[in-house]
Length: 214
Image (cartoon, rainbow, N blue to C red):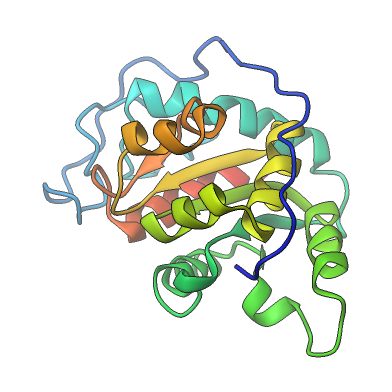
Protein backbone atom coordinates (compact mmCIF):
# COMPACT_ATOMS: atom_id res chain seq x y z
CA UNK A 1 0.00 0.00 0.00
CA UNK A 2 1.10 3.64 0.18
CA UNK A 3 4.28 4.44 2.05
CA UNK A 4 4.09 5.71 5.59
CA UNK A 5 5.56 5.47 9.06
CA UNK A 6 6.56 2.30 10.80
CA UNK A 7 4.16 1.11 13.50
CA UNK A 8 4.86 -1.17 16.45
CA UNK A 9 2.98 -4.42 16.79
CA UNK A 10 1.64 -3.46 20.20
CA UNK A 11 0.32 -5.98 22.69
CA UNK A 12 0.19 -9.46 21.23
CA UNK A 13 -1.54 -12.40 22.81
CA UNK A 14 -1.02 -15.89 21.47
CA UNK A 15 -3.93 -18.30 21.19
CA UNK A 16 -4.16 -21.96 22.03
CA UNK A 17 -7.90 -22.37 21.55
CA UNK A 18 -9.74 -25.62 21.87
CA UNK A 19 -10.73 -26.80 18.40
CA UNK A 20 -14.27 -25.76 17.51
CA UNK A 21 -15.41 -28.39 15.11
CA UNK A 22 -17.84 -31.22 14.75
CA UNK A 23 -16.72 -34.85 14.66
CA UNK A 24 -15.10 -35.91 11.43
CA UNK A 25 -17.32 -34.96 8.54
CA UNK A 26 -16.49 -35.75 4.96
CA UNK A 27 -18.55 -33.75 2.48
CA UNK A 28 -19.38 -35.08 -0.95
CA UNK A 29 -16.40 -34.99 -3.25
CA UNK A 30 -16.27 -31.88 -5.40
CA UNK A 31 -13.11 -32.65 -7.25
CA UNK A 32 -9.53 -32.85 -6.04
CA UNK A 33 -6.67 -30.42 -6.23
CA UNK A 34 -6.56 -26.83 -5.14
CA UNK A 35 -9.47 -25.75 -7.30
CA UNK A 36 -12.28 -27.94 -5.97
CA UNK A 37 -14.68 -26.91 -3.24
CA UNK A 38 -13.49 -29.83 -1.11
CA UNK A 39 -9.80 -29.28 -1.71
CA UNK A 40 -8.63 -29.60 1.89
CA UNK A 41 -7.43 -33.11 2.59
CA UNK A 42 -9.29 -33.63 5.89
CA UNK A 43 -13.04 -33.69 6.38
CA UNK A 44 -13.41 -31.68 9.60
CA UNK A 45 -16.34 -29.26 9.74
CA UNK A 46 -16.25 -26.30 12.15
CA UNK A 47 -19.35 -25.43 14.14
CA UNK A 48 -19.95 -22.28 12.08
CA UNK A 49 -20.02 -24.16 8.76
CA UNK A 50 -23.59 -24.82 7.56
CA UNK A 51 -24.70 -28.42 7.49
CA UNK A 52 -25.10 -28.44 3.71
CA UNK A 53 -21.64 -26.99 3.04
CA UNK A 54 -19.39 -28.89 0.64
CA UNK A 55 -16.23 -27.26 2.02
CA UNK A 56 -13.69 -29.40 3.85
CA UNK A 57 -11.46 -27.91 6.54
CA UNK A 58 -8.30 -29.36 8.04
CA UNK A 59 -8.10 -29.49 11.85
CA UNK A 60 -5.29 -26.92 11.67
CA UNK A 61 -7.54 -24.52 9.74
CA UNK A 62 -10.32 -24.90 12.31
CA UNK A 63 -7.93 -24.24 15.18
CA UNK A 64 -6.52 -21.21 13.40
CA UNK A 65 -9.89 -19.70 12.51
CA UNK A 66 -11.70 -20.34 15.80
CA UNK A 67 -10.37 -17.19 17.61
CA UNK A 68 -11.50 -14.99 14.73
CA UNK A 69 -14.95 -16.54 14.82
CA UNK A 70 -15.19 -15.59 18.48
CA UNK A 71 -14.24 -12.01 17.65
CA UNK A 72 -16.79 -11.91 14.83
CA UNK A 73 -19.55 -13.25 17.08
CA UNK A 74 -18.71 -10.71 19.79
CA UNK A 75 -19.10 -7.84 17.30
CA UNK A 76 -22.04 -9.29 15.37
CA UNK A 77 -24.75 -7.18 17.11
CA UNK A 78 -23.20 -4.02 15.63
CA UNK A 79 -24.92 -3.70 12.23
CA UNK A 80 -22.85 -0.71 11.06
CA UNK A 81 -19.70 -2.81 10.85
CA UNK A 82 -18.35 -4.33 7.65
CA UNK A 83 -17.65 -8.03 7.81
CA UNK A 84 -14.02 -7.68 6.80
CA UNK A 85 -11.15 -5.25 6.43
CA UNK A 86 -8.87 -6.32 3.56
CA UNK A 87 -5.21 -5.44 4.14
CA UNK A 88 -2.96 -5.83 1.12
CA UNK A 89 0.17 -4.52 -0.55
CA UNK A 90 -0.23 -1.55 -2.86
CA UNK A 91 1.40 -3.59 -5.63
CA UNK A 92 -1.36 -6.22 -5.35
CA UNK A 93 -4.28 -3.78 -5.57
CA UNK A 94 -5.10 -4.51 -9.23
CA UNK A 95 -4.28 -8.22 -9.07
CA UNK A 96 -4.65 -10.73 -6.24
CA UNK A 97 -6.25 -8.24 -3.82
CA UNK A 98 -8.97 -7.28 -6.28
CA UNK A 99 -9.54 -10.94 -7.16
CA UNK A 100 -10.00 -11.85 -3.50
CA UNK A 101 -12.19 -8.80 -2.86
CA UNK A 102 -14.48 -9.67 -5.77
CA UNK A 103 -14.75 -13.32 -4.74
CA UNK A 104 -15.62 -12.34 -1.17
CA UNK A 105 -18.29 -9.88 -2.27
CA UNK A 106 -19.74 -12.52 -4.59
CA UNK A 107 -20.20 -14.65 -1.46
CA UNK A 108 -22.10 -11.85 0.27
CA UNK A 109 -19.23 -10.59 2.44
CA UNK A 110 -19.09 -6.84 3.02
CA UNK A 111 -15.46 -5.80 2.56
CA UNK A 112 -13.62 -2.59 3.39
CA UNK A 113 -11.20 -2.26 0.48
CA UNK A 114 -9.02 0.80 -0.01
CA UNK A 115 -9.45 0.73 -3.79
CA UNK A 116 -13.12 1.64 -3.43
CA UNK A 117 -13.42 3.05 0.10
CA UNK A 118 -10.64 5.68 0.19
CA UNK A 119 -11.94 8.72 -1.68
CA UNK A 120 -9.68 11.11 -3.53
CA UNK A 121 -8.70 14.08 -1.42
CA UNK A 122 -9.40 12.36 1.90
CA UNK A 123 -6.55 11.83 4.42
CA UNK A 124 -5.36 8.31 3.65
CA UNK A 125 -4.31 7.28 7.17
CA UNK A 126 -7.52 8.65 8.67
CA UNK A 127 -9.56 6.61 6.19
CA UNK A 128 -7.53 3.51 7.10
CA UNK A 129 -8.32 4.15 10.78
CA UNK A 130 -12.02 4.46 9.95
CA UNK A 131 -11.93 1.23 7.97
CA UNK A 132 -10.31 -0.66 10.84
CA UNK A 133 -12.80 0.72 13.35
CA UNK A 134 -15.77 -0.18 11.14
CA UNK A 135 -14.85 -3.81 10.46
CA UNK A 136 -15.48 -6.90 12.56
CA UNK A 137 -12.27 -8.63 11.60
CA UNK A 138 -9.29 -8.12 9.31
CA UNK A 139 -7.83 -10.26 6.56
CA UNK A 140 -4.29 -9.76 5.32
CA UNK A 141 -3.30 -11.04 1.89
CA UNK A 142 0.33 -12.03 2.44
CA UNK A 143 2.27 -11.95 -0.82
CA UNK A 144 5.93 -11.32 -1.67
CA UNK A 145 4.97 -7.69 -2.36
CA UNK A 146 3.40 -7.29 1.07
CA UNK A 147 6.40 -8.85 2.80
CA UNK A 148 8.64 -6.38 1.02
CA UNK A 149 6.44 -3.48 2.15
CA UNK A 150 6.32 -4.72 5.74
CA UNK A 151 10.07 -5.22 5.79
CA UNK A 152 10.58 -1.63 4.64
CA UNK A 153 7.80 -0.09 6.77
CA UNK A 154 4.64 1.56 5.45
CA UNK A 155 0.87 1.65 5.70
CA UNK A 156 0.59 -2.13 5.46
CA UNK A 157 2.74 -2.36 8.58
CA UNK A 158 0.49 0.10 10.41
CA UNK A 159 -2.61 -1.88 9.50
CA UNK A 160 -0.99 -5.14 10.57
CA UNK A 161 0.10 -3.60 13.87
CA UNK A 162 -3.43 -2.53 14.75
CA UNK A 163 -5.04 -5.80 13.72
CA UNK A 164 -2.43 -7.91 15.51
CA UNK A 165 -2.88 -5.86 18.67
CA UNK A 166 -6.62 -6.55 18.60
CA UNK A 167 -6.31 -10.24 17.67
CA UNK A 168 -8.34 -9.60 14.53
CA UNK A 169 -6.01 -10.68 11.74
CA UNK A 170 -6.75 -13.61 9.42
CA UNK A 171 -3.70 -14.38 7.27
CA UNK A 172 -4.09 -15.63 3.71
CA UNK A 173 -0.74 -16.65 2.27
CA UNK A 174 -0.44 -16.35 -1.50
CA UNK A 175 2.62 -17.20 -3.62
CA UNK A 176 4.84 -17.36 -0.53
CA UNK A 177 5.14 -19.58 2.56
CA UNK A 178 4.70 -19.22 6.29
CA UNK A 179 8.41 -19.91 6.67
CA UNK A 180 9.18 -16.88 4.52
CA UNK A 181 6.64 -14.82 6.47
CA UNK A 182 8.34 -15.69 9.75
CA UNK A 183 11.71 -14.45 8.48
CA UNK A 184 10.16 -11.01 7.92
CA UNK A 185 7.64 -10.90 10.80
CA UNK A 186 7.77 -13.65 13.44
CA UNK A 187 4.55 -12.35 15.02
CA UNK A 188 2.65 -12.36 11.76
CA UNK A 189 4.12 -15.74 10.87
CA UNK A 190 2.95 -17.17 14.18
CA UNK A 191 -0.67 -16.60 13.15
CA UNK A 192 -1.91 -19.55 11.15
CA UNK A 193 -4.63 -19.05 8.59
CA UNK A 194 -5.33 -20.07 5.01
CA UNK A 195 -2.97 -20.73 2.13
CA UNK A 196 -3.54 -20.71 -1.63
CA UNK A 197 -1.08 -23.60 -1.86
CA UNK A 198 -3.77 -25.71 -0.14
CA UNK A 199 -6.99 -24.12 -1.42
CA UNK A 200 -7.81 -22.04 -4.46
CA UNK A 201 -8.62 -18.36 -3.97
CA UNK A 202 -12.26 -19.19 -4.68
CA UNK A 203 -12.37 -21.84 -1.95
CA UNK A 204 -10.65 -19.50 0.49
CA UNK A 205 -13.27 -16.83 -0.21
CA UNK A 206 -16.02 -19.37 0.50
CA UNK A 207 -14.38 -20.39 3.79
CA UNK A 208 -14.01 -16.77 4.87
CA UNK A 209 -17.66 -16.20 3.96
CA UNK A 210 -18.74 -19.09 6.19
CA UNK A 211 -16.54 -17.73 8.96
CA UNK A 212 -17.96 -14.19 8.95
CA UNK A 213 -21.63 -14.96 8.37
CA UNK A 214 -23.49 -14.98 11.72
